[in-house]
Image 1 (cartoon, helix red, strand yellow):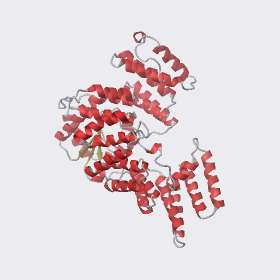
Image 2 (image 1 turned 135 degrees about the vertical axis):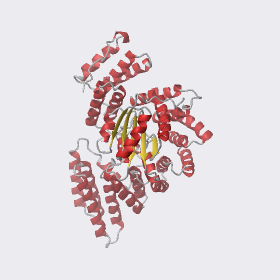
Image 3 (image 1 turned 180 degrees about the horizontal axis):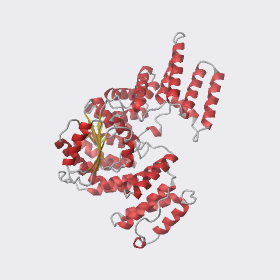
Image 4 (image 1 turned 120 degrees about the vertical axis):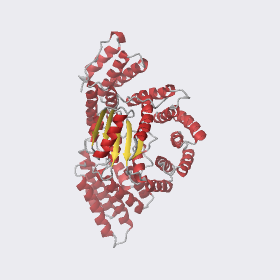
Length: 537
């Protein structure tokens, strides 16, 4: 594929940078590349809304460490909230080429990291290569966004021949999808061949994932140890290696790996929190305290800001109090209370935080022999818990907070335990909101965006009947309007109608389901043109 012949005339571009001079310079570069539809904005809190609701083909995101909201924070939150579409080209631009910043940006997986200043030739080369790859992968991205991993994997196999320059890139995508689909044997075969022939670090990392998925932990550990020795900045390899050491019961080894990873890439809160957790279990309380304090500092403007590091830090003071001498105990008790008060002050509306704080106070009182006080705190936690829409498992919360006997690598913590890697949690209200965004994009004829939001609505709530019916309708319309992939699209119609048939539907969803079932029973040629049924809610 000749990437020099990229047509940018139909591309929509979002250019984000806090410097007016930088925006102007890059704006004119983009114009010279033939891009007319450019929205150039400064970095502010509204950028995320633009990204979430827009339909951009290319996003160029600048970073300046002195900004109140930085580019890396925008990138991190966009990834966390699922706003990073596979089909969008994400270019992260920074004049800070320090190892800490670049590795932190890479944690959020931009497509390209460009160091400012750069020339138009640099920009053209990176965009040409990136857009050519994205154009080729677009059918695969659409299948991923609609949740059809099987179709996406099949498309990877059939999309390009072995002589195509992008063949290897497509096979890398195919292997990742095989892992997400838990087809570990196939993924192992694909990555094993690539890794041992070319010593490709990405292939090695994914081969280790496949081996771990097959239960071959020690083989996976051996490969990862070789990778971190040869590529000491491949931080994802450290993360996976620490997980596998923990699964093998090698907690000291897991802690040492995370210590090295956070020394090289210290700006990621999830990794610092993992170090704190493992260090607490191995009773390296000084290391754990440093990790939690770093998490609190980093969390001031991060999407990962939460009461958790405060609560974990309070627990460290509790653990220290158990072993302290009489003279040190008052200071540690004051530090315990101070940290919990800070959590309550900074997160006053977090009901879960109130419950966890009560559990921790109860545990401390139990440690010092005040059983009546401990029982009072337990009742307080139980009363608060009953008021939650979805009550917590208090015994599980206690184990996690105490870090005394935390269960080994819970399924939710392991990237290998589930086929998907999204960070969404069950949230019916968010599901409805995202579904409405999908309707908005559908009405604006932005079908790819509509697919994405309907799919995300189902991730937030698999029982959202309206989102399921919306997807069934869209696939039926696409099958009617084009012969390409018609069988696959009809299969998706049947799939979503089958899922709604398993739900206890009421009107108007029940009527909508019957209407679509009747349309599906007709020959495609007999279907009316245009919208087949109103998208409800």
